[in-house]
Length: 106
Image 1 (cartoon, rainbow, N blue to C red):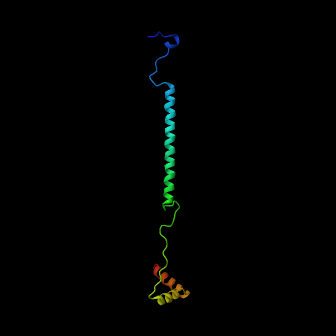
Image 2 (cartoon, rainbow, N blue to C red):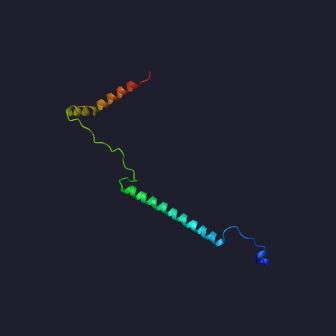
Image 3 (tube, one colour):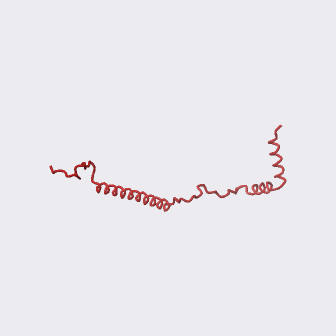
């Protein structure tokens, strides 16, 4: 072997990779991490755009729309007569009295 000088006598051989290779691996790891994060971000954006375009809006819409009022065709006269009678103040007063009598506690 080669003779060791004073500077080389105190230095032990390293078991690890040289420092320039470690820096290269660290840089490559950061680039891969950034690329994965960018891919995940772009995928989320694409999914949201696809979701909005395919009649699945993110904005809340009513799930159960109100149906139109049903009116009887066969007994329309009876319906009108009962509605007119129910709308009177006398009926409302008597209905309050009936309900108040039903709820009384002895």
